[in-house]
Image (cartoon, rainbow, N blue to C red; front, side):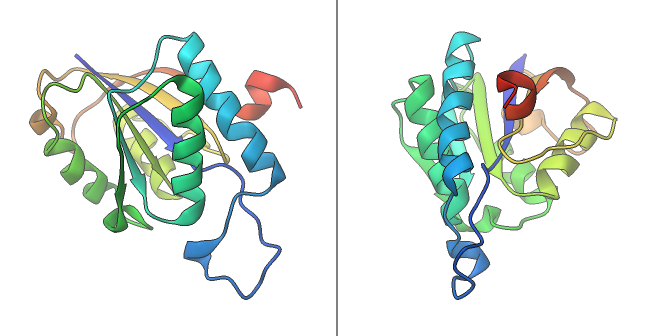
Amino acid sequence: MKTLLILRHAKSSWDNPALSDYDRPLNKRGKRDAPRIGKHLNQQGLVPDCILTSSAKRARKTASKVAKACGYTEKINRLDDLYLAPPGVYYEYLQELSNKYQCVMVVGHNPTMEQLVSHLSGELHRMPTAAIAHFQLPIEHWKMLDLSTKGKLVNLWTPKTLFND
């Protein structure tokens, strides 16, 4: 059994129209929510063994803030291929992971995060910014993961449902 955490990046800023989509930073709410999500993961005993993130600025910063707050101390794997990638690209990277990783977190963008949650759960779920889905996967090795894998959606947390603000 493996654990997968699917995190949509925290709220980003649209203040500077000259910035490319890739370079947009987190806004005030995003900077507040990301560490709170990390702290929540720590409280749930869900510190990942490995983090894979899109290399877009808002995803990188979200991954960094969540990692620090949850107590993750390993390298965060920043992957250009995950920026606006379809779900299959995430599956390919997950399939290549070492079996030593029991709990992995991926950080990316919609609509892909919602598509990953839908593929794994068989249900449609909204993934607002900084939402995180916790799955238990019925696989012993990451290489067994494919688009037909159905996992158990243990929880789907959002800043709004967790923090009421």
